[in-house]
Image (cartoon, rainbow, N blue to C red; front, side, top):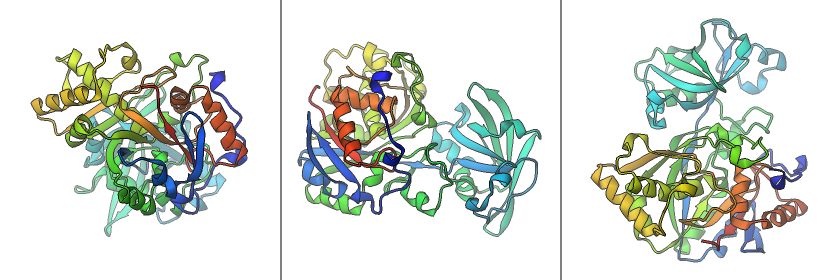
Length: 419
């Protein structure tokens, strides 16, 4: 992975958002850098016969702090006021994804009374008692939230959350008590600004533990400009997992295990992809991986009609081992739509581990709008799959010209020509 490394100075990392979403800088690449602009001008760089696909997943308040022993926490006290000493008496539970019994994610978010999640636990060694408890005030009623360790598995714990309010669902629980999980390199507590800005303006599908950050730059100004030009916008869902922060720690990225993430796409979108002549631009790497996964899921289902529709998954290397036999996007999406109708599915829910790496042949996407990514990351592999070694010139230009990097940073519009 050394060839996908670069020096990222701390002063180039965006630890806070830009003043306005659409004021962020935009670099446009089409086999070379052809323009520099701001996101509010992005419509000027996109032809009319294109459609933008956005990931509408919503970041959940996945960080929950508990006392070290059974007791109560003053939920009115802002986390910013917790001192380093008092933090040592806290245990942080970070919800990664629900267990199989509570998937897909929507099921876990709507759970009542109890739910189980795979979690990271900060201060796990201090957790000696069977339970951790929080006393909460909800609509003038007191309720108790209890966390119980069910099991420890490789890299995470299984935690059961339970609460004594018959009508409140888990999404309301974490909205009441949880904190937005900022990326791990931002070493501060999420504030009121983060609650708004570490969320896209169009986020509706709860389930991500990290923002699909390419969409953070899109506001009403941008959407109005796109609409005025007749550029379509479509929404798909990939719930971003904590694995998105995982650096590639092995020298050969082929040995890196991609995390599985849930995608959720309605049949209307599949129909659009089957019939539209518009070219597709993915807003963010999560949208790109969702769109490309749809193509390969269609091929996988076509080649294995006995596949269980309740256990659809695209494995890390399926796109490189399945024989698509030059099946077009329209053919693949037409087949997928027909299969969904046959199975009486209004939406396709699956998991994807797709790794897009240099040499990958894009099937659906013609362009990508994305931020500047961390060194040695799977996200940077996607950029290399589009731009080849030119990614280095793009990133060096951005560093030299004071572009802001990572989640709150500036971004690029990349065009693809090797389909």
